[in-house]
Amino acid sequence: MKSTTRKVDSRKQIALVAHDHCKSELVRWVKENKEALAQHSLFATGTTGSLLSKETGLTITSLMSGPMGGDQQLGAMICEKKIDVLIFFWDPLSAVPHDPDVKALLRIAAVWNIPVAINRASAGYLITSPNMSQEVEIEVPDYDAYLAERI
Image (tube, rainbow, N blue to C red; front, top):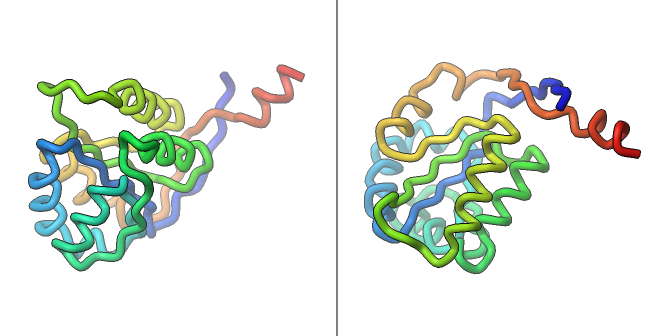
């Protein structure tokens, strides 16, 4: 597929997601990085978003709970260029009933070439990157060209 670029603003749109066994770890990480995260627009799946808002006082737009469609909502937002960064503390040792949705979310994040953190270490690298506070260009699929070829 052909590609193009898109500008990502200095104020990023960050999605925060955590499996049940990882929610407390995400809360701790968000508290540790509250000042940096407050500079961005934050989104989360339902339970995680409610918990983070309550525990940190940050403004977070909560979507549906992951198993109820929140993962798919985030995937759609990535396709619509409404999410720039995905921070997803997932539990690789526990099976979850909505595992296909989780895989689809990670797949769509890869397709649209957005940065993804899956644990504290990678989230730490992302939040401290100079790119988090400046406008950047990323390469993305040229969907218009893709459609033009198919018609």
